[in-house]
Amino acid sequence: MILLQAARPLLADFAATLFYVAVAAITRNPLLATALALAVAAAQLGWACAQGRAIGPLQGMGFGLVAVFGSASLMTHDPRFMMFKPTAVYLLIGAVMLKRGWMLRYLPAQALPRIKAAAIVRWGYAWAALMLLTAALNVYFALYASFSAWSRFVAVFPAASKATLFAAQYLAMRASARGAQVQTLAAT
Image (cartoon, rainbow, N blue to C red):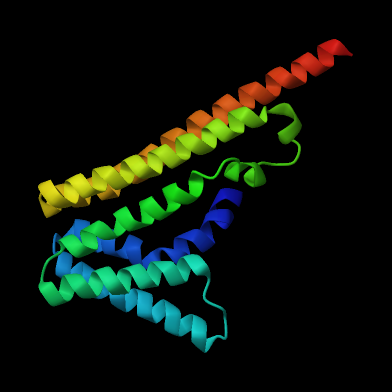
């Protein structure tokens, strides 16, 4: 439940993109998915403005990318523009994740003394590598695969790879923290 509460703002920020992927996968019609994703993004921004809420940076970036890539797809009748949109997102996120120690602020305070900072930095780089790999794979699928194959890729690989890396990191860090705790108890 806590994970869902934490993920809710992120899911809201990328609602138009997620809607695009779902509609594209179901209908196999990239132009329809693009038009509907633009409508969802515009409706979200309109709703936020009507309620007097500020537009968050990720929501603004998501809308901007949907607007630019989506409009290009609709004007040229070429779905590849929208298919390249995830590449831009993954490249931006991967570049930010290349900053040494970016992950330190996301760990619980009680975990920091039990896990070596170097290990946390390495996991941060592993996340950056995954984002950059996903961007490269998205380029490949957008250029060389059918829209149907790209839809399956974008619907499965990004989420599955992130879940796998998250699980591996969680288990490794938990084991490291427990080992440090056992050593501390044995020393006393």
